Image 1 (spheres, rainbow, N blue to C red):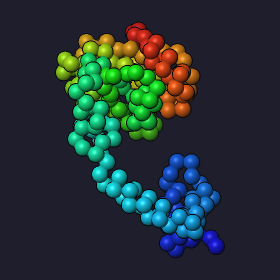
Image 2 (image 1 turned 90 degrees about the vertical axis):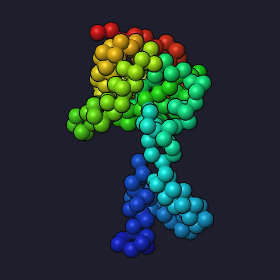
Image 3 (image 1 turned 135 degrees about the vertical axis):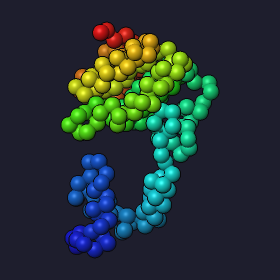
Image 4 (image 1 turned 120 degrees about the vertical axis):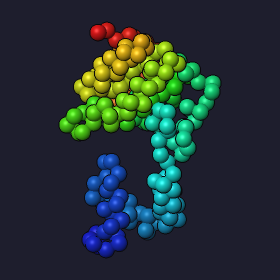
Length: 201
């Protein structure tokens, strides 16, 4: 039996939108759901449909949220004078799970990459600049990944912070060059976060 233009073929093709899922993996998933777990497949379809409809972005930090503000931004006990800037919601989650950070966040949803069409506008520069100039933020922790694009983004963010008279710090050593925060072990990430340093001109 092979996937084609039938409904089965459409299911296999739809599953291929997931990262790291090729034709064979998608086919295996489709067959598993149809042969052994139709209830699980139906639940997946319901939850996925609801998530696509209801999950948007936080109006303050751009993290995923079902309401106007995410749970972190709505939490009055978080330190609003500390703002940690990350590339993705996965990076935010990694920091939340590995460190004792109690400030707030800003999620860029990417990093500066002109070749991919990602410039300051796509990263929410207007919203970030408003927060920095609002007078509440005293330190901006730059937690972009230590890749070429991540480093370029970090320098751009540091300039943005300085223009608003906000102290800019960067995660310290411990995070491997070329790595991704969501794949760094908790101990390494906690050490790097605790040893952050100020960026020089």
